[in-house]
Length: 344
Image (cartoon, rainbow, N blue to C red; front, side, top):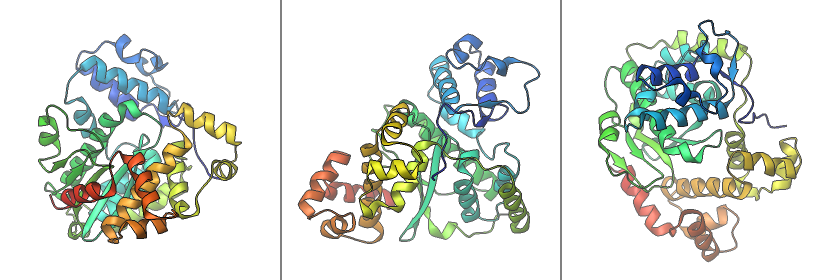
């Protein structure tokens, strides 16, 4: 059975990211009432916060929504990202700090994403000579997606700069239209920005993956990884778990019924749970198919016929129609846009 947690299930230590977000808002004179409205997180105000208190992702998301609204500042998501990593999650955070290379850091982040980045699930792929770190939803927060992406990208950029001793030449793709003002993106992320892509991703030349970092220790990182492995497991959110499941089976035409069985629930329950996460099964499957198609176009140099065959479509024309339904555009322009992003 596939392990997962609902967004309403307490799974995030209150002393960690939620407490830091609340502290940031209060330091900028946002009122407690505005920050905590609808969250049920009033215990965070107690001077002696119980060490084992857990917060549901839905509560943390509401807190972030309140914070963004109360401060109404274009730099809020980026400033929150500055304090996100390495975090305070014991062995997993220590493994990040001791990472000897960028490859090791990204591997740790992806492996322990449910602890280190509980709201977005990072995944790493290599296309040609480019490493691609892309982000998929973990808890179901479409309205906060742009801010969450900015937070997590900033967190990775800042951590890499600290550990590597220099600012790495990341490039960025965003699955959204360009904002009216991009100054904060440029300040915190750099100028290599591309919008209107079909995924939220950070790209870097693969040659940077294995350059040794002055602060890192392979031995200490391995010990921390072993310690993290011995701790209680933390299951991912439903959208993240479903993405991983569908990605492994994308060529076999996954169905709602079979997926529900493997997740240990009825089809009706899975549909209800996905609705509570502001999504549905077909949307999640279409997202996975879109990402796989992008990978095949860029990394494998597949044409429409080859991608259609890989994904189980009867012909290229049917695939093109489906692709336009998923993304709003046909494969040709998107392939050109992706190639441009990779060459920024």
